[in-house]
Length: 281
Image (cartoon, rainbow, N blue to C red; front, top):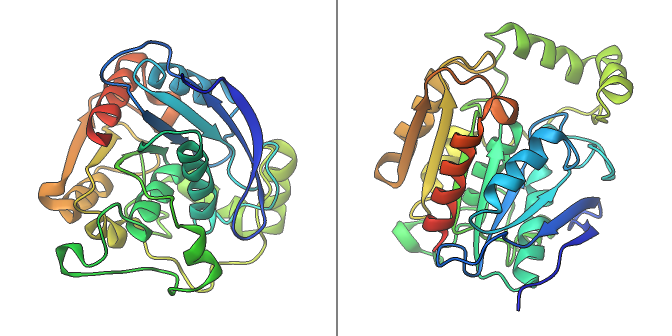
């Protein structure tokens, strides 16, 4: 018997409360089984936003779905670190999905959430330690952060409209975003106009970038999705990610698509949901 729909506050290993919701799959099929898809939204989003709900509804055709609001967003506590400690938020959501009885988990992230999904998968891959001749963790073994990733591994990863590298300012939208994050006036606009609370401290240390993280995800299946009209990150970003993934990654360049959840149409969301559910098995 599948769990009923649920809404609860999760607690991350560093003590932040994260607003999360669970929805069982909407149809019984061989592809859904015991799989859950965990959705990581983009910067300034939250689980109540219409575009996040639309994505969740599309994915629910193929698996159960967990949505959540990153720290500093919506009803979650804390302040946004714009892709750094958000890895712990995603880890808490994945652990909850496993606590609900799902043994196969796919993570699907959009924009900032896409970079978080990549870093999360690299920090705690599903492969046993020593697989592919290496073991890597951004946080040292025995640390609070490292322990918080226990049981939070993913079995498939989808990154949509994510950057490959940090501090990119090559487009007007990204220059505006950097103003929001780095200036007191920008953080005030974000807090009161966009319902997103941003931490005033910069990264120290700088977290590993998405493109540095991608090679460490293998052999977990990885899908990189990007629109050829993305106004934030041009096509060299997904191509860098795909090249770093090698034979363990798949790249979809979507004709006419813009940026992240708002630009993903229902047909694309259905294809992503089907891919995620199939490859998580």
